[in-house]
Structures are given as C-alpha cells and as structure tokens.
Image (cartoon, rainbow, N blue to C red; front, top):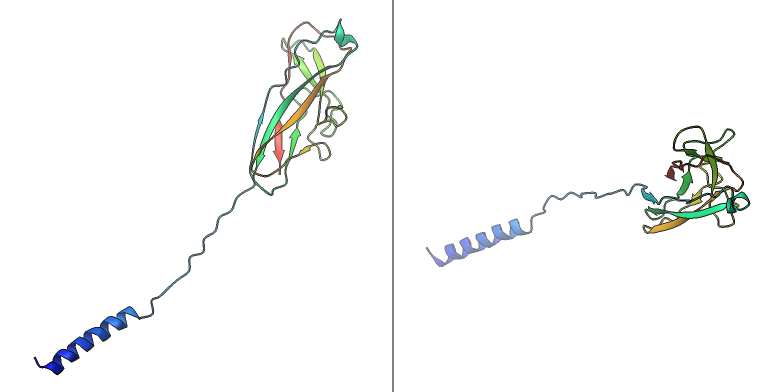
Length: 172
C-alpha cells in the first residue's frame, strides 16, 4: 500500500469519526412536576375535668380545665380547627353557639353541661361554624392550641361518671 493510499485511509477514518462525533443528536425535554396537596395532621388530648362537687365548691364556682390540640399543616395553606357539638348537644345548640353536654355513663338520661373556649377568659366559644374556629399556623411545624373547658356551677346530677366525644376537624 502506498503512502497516498495510507494517508487517504487515515483521512477517511478521521472524517468518519468526526462526522459521527459532531452529528446532531435528536433531543427531547422531559417536564418534571409535582404537587403538594393541602394536608394537615391533627391530634387531641383528653379533657378530663375530674370531680364535680355539686354540693361543695362547684355549687358556686365553675369547674375549669384545659387540654391541647396539636395541628401540623403544610406551608402556605389557610386552615382552621373546628370542634363539633359533641354527641349530646342540648336543644337549641348550633354550629356557632354549641351547647354541649356530657351524658351519664349509666345512660339514665342525666346530663352535665359544659363549654369549650378558645381563650382563657372564656369569651370565645369554640365551635364548628364560620365565626368561631381557631386559625392554624401553616408552616410545616406542629403547633399546640389550648382548649379551655368549663363545667358551669350549680348543676345537679346523678353520682356517676359523665362523658362526651367532640370531633376536632381541620378545615381547609
């Protein structure tokens, strides 16, 4: 093989390699998306009033106790916590002005009224209507909200245990 043939073959090989190396490659974009849906976690502790002394101190003084609700919501969402009327609302109870009561556990028809408030002064009733829910801080962190419970003084009832269940809901 002569020198010109070798040079021609080497040049041809380099040209073929360069053509493959610099050829336009077909491309396509992949769109990548994700959504974070509005989401919250909620937990609630028991509100245990303890003993109601209807003939003693609670004949003239309300029985007060607190508990906490913990809420964690994803960042930048608007949410609030509502508390329903419980299992045994009094006649006339409403979403905005709940009149809750605990039922005697022997189911004889005896009830003990109580109220749940958003504030320590017992001015803002906590309900499940538009105007009496607690606004939630939504920043991906858990936040505690205090529930202020009051059993009004001067009630008479059977010497038994009383109970109710209130559902706490995050609205968004």
